[in-house]
Image (cartoon, rainbow, N blue to C red; front, side):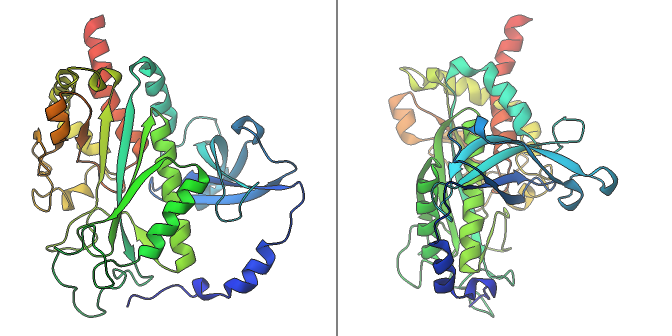
Length: 370
């Protein structure tokens, strides 16, 4: 079995003795932000005198950007701007988790702060009632980087019995999955569901439907909760799009999209128009669908293992080998949503939802104004 961290083996009964102590009127607030890798999350905690009732009650803060790949040591202070507040499932009420945007010393957005621009775009299309749902796949690893519960030397049985599987020989790490689900519900993350994936030790959960900027906020917080729950169990969750070479499925972050028009009668025509626009911007989208300009996704989007080839754009009803899938029920009802299957598991949800919005909705506005 893959190795687990030593800190996860600390005496939890002793910990609980301290966690049960009352904290008076004081409130712990944990500030959470995306670091300079565009993938990693950082956090630190402070005390407020009273429980905040809204995001406006939480003060700005700062951190050392030279230690998070975000600044030079000679000018390292970065600003944390609170943008969305959640309940804290680890230290419980009244404590809070707060997602933050990062600004540089000159108050401009940090390079990996895609939320700032995404929010502007979402404000432009507010009347379209744009809904997203994102399907976050991830893989559990031991601290040695080996997939959790895989044989130390060799491989488990081939893919087939693991997807939505049950039983100790099929489902690896369900405790983590169920604890993460509960943590999301407690925190107020809009989690929709979860299931075991095709590769053993690989799982998926879905967040949404969320409107506009909320999609990125809720997905990033769900990722923080996942990493934190895994920390307690001594294992690692990786969002690597292809954690194991060979005949094993990769990990994506399929993105479901619908506007008010798409959800209404005969919305299928609006879905088809959006897909047509996406077909003309395939290369640009691939560049923003993982944090490294497509270099991560090229290992996953091979045309095998339920993916389309990274170089080709395709669309189809109920086709999991296409870039864009129209669910069978949507084809039948002639309204609903479409699924972009290209984003990698480690994508930035702000970058993805912004690209889709610009291509499908704002280019239409640009054409009208010309």
